[in-house]
Amino acid sequence: MRLVIAVTGASGVIYGIRALEALKKLRVETHLILSEWGEKTIKIETDKTGDYVRSLATKVYEDNNMAAPVSSGSFKTDGMAVIPCSMRTLASIANGLDDTLVSRAASVCIKEGRKVVIVPREAPLSKIHLENMSKLAGIHNIVIMPAMPGFYHRPQTMDDLIDHVVGKALDQFGIDHGLFRRWGERAGGKMA
Image (cartoon, rainbow, N blue to C red):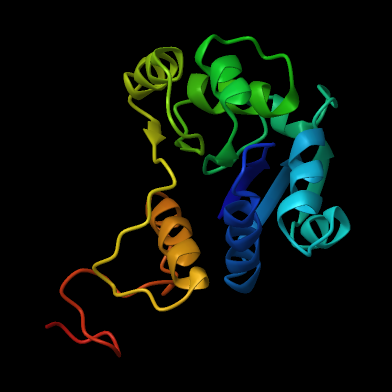
């Protein structure tokens, strides 16, 4: 499997970091686009560095590199996750601006019929944010999956909450990850 992972400047960069950590462990080929503000937010919100996050990916591209392989439909992928997705990036994707590599790579996935999972992170949401999400949700291969963890798995730590959101995003690509206990399962994976 080959996925494009974009980490943008929305609060919640830990979701993108954890997704990359999980995908590396699962040996999924990842093509990372780390936006300028994504990297700045890593410094603000975590004790990780941009270099650490880059080390998790198979290949890394600068967000201003419009000639990167992921900017072309001829570069085969199984899809893309924008995790987290800033409202600026959401607007760019929703309106087909293709003004950054993140936006262009998403546009390529959309036109090629590949799945795009968008994990927006903002609160509260304005009517403009919701209209952009609604526009994208009307496209068959796009999943809008806000960073809203569930609690049925009885999270005990912040990592449990993070893993739930990341696991739900990876579920969209059919990736067996084991990051959280599913509805109806008891500890150890048995059905309740």
